[in-house]
Image 1: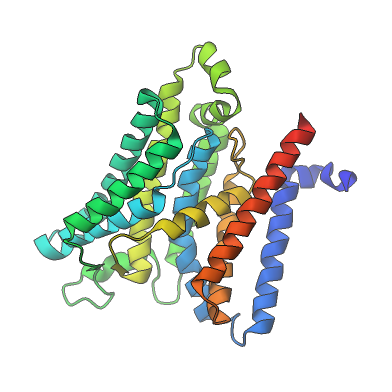
Image 2 (image 1 turned 60 degrees about the vertical axis):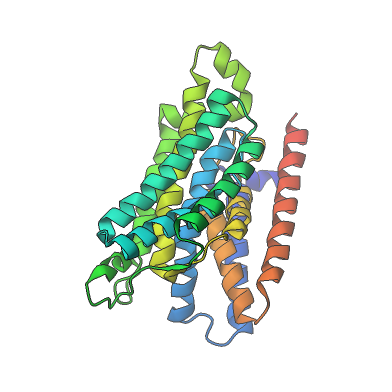
Length: 325
């Protein structure tokens, strides 16, 4: 096993990521064998619809976890962005492009809010994110008067459904192209820029970084700002795929996004993150939820499995760190 791990190709790709990708392929084969037609285009498109918004959520929280922080508010904030922007679109007749920019701007504001409280005020990330989760739920409900919000359909008479082309044009998954471009940009940002290096260093040893003269508050806050922007983008892809948003929801997606990060090799202790691993983790979670639906199991079953996955991979991360120390 050690010889395999030391192989240059395996070291380059990452042993854990290779194993996770093999698990993804085995899951797909198992569901295809168990469910007739699972390998069809309709199922694949449904999986991709889930990948887009969950992917942006998971990529955003990857930056936060890399600093040693956490954000449990991403799901409710995504719903808050979609609710407020959609309500403005429907009630006040705002152009679709304004609603999209509004969604991203709201996500950005939440990111700034969380980042400021954690980095400059010094409140623990867990407390901040739990408080922000409730604020997002309440704000979305108050703004929309506790009503669900539906974004325009593709065949909208006024032509407002054009934004759905961001997700799919006919049978072409344009969302996959956009998502892939975002992944490349974020990979470069995390691994080949000063910002990414400082974000990772904060998770490894924040005090050492501070003593070296680096403005740790600025770089820590940047991680939350990036997360907020990606959450706002996730909201756009969510409504592009599923149309209707209900107030007070979104908690489930926190766990799924964090599970995707952990599975992909991002350490909950900070200092170690993998953009590519997070993407594979997102595909695993999306495939899992589609497979469970195809087998006519309940959403609660997926929640149980996701929770167990988090425990297993966090335990593996803790054990690896102990062996290393």
